Image (tube, rainbow, N blue to C red; front, top):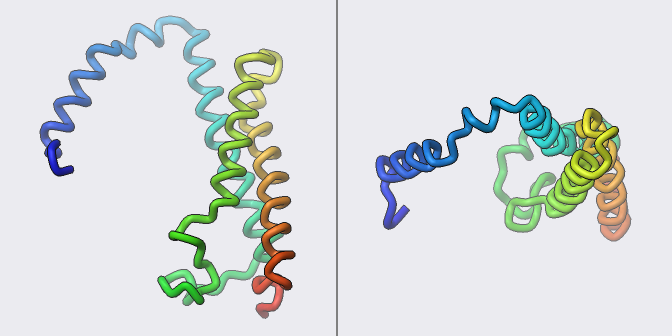
Length: 143
């Protein structure tokens, strides 16, 4: 931001896109399938983490007021504002889904589900470990 303005950044992006010529990449139907499969491999883990967090970790209970507090004592506060367990689960599941897309071609069409299930299991495992260290889940105590 100090050296590149918004306008300069736009020019760099436009020039880079012309150099990459993405329209030539999509002349090949196989490239389109790989693109969609990799996109699914990145989106699937997000769904897995969200579903496990809402239904299993937080037991379908949300404290709306705590969503809007920046206090470290808030219910949804994480170190530096990031739940690292979700980042770890996302990275592990995305890599598993992407690797299955490229190396096990029969599973390429299922990248969304592979990523979703792997992230769900990894995230649940990591969060249960965290909650067991904290004693009792604060989410389970809420009514």
